[in-house]
Image 1 (cartoon, one colour):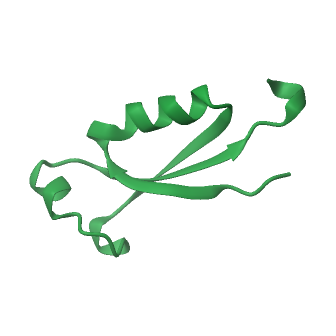
Image 2 (tube, rainbow, N blue to C red; image 1 turned 90 degrees about the vertical axis):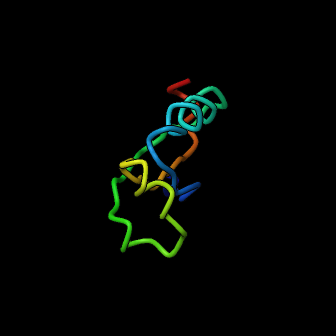
Length: 66
């Protein structure tokens, strides 16, 4: 089984686009909500908008499930 790879850390506004793009490319996508203090990236703009922040993970779907 393939391991999940972290792709991005992003706010709610962009999640639908990112998730849709990777699913269209044949990936399974998993989201993990994180607190701003748990990430090293600048999250000030996301916090100011009141957005939840997520780590986006993906892995290829097994051939038999496509």
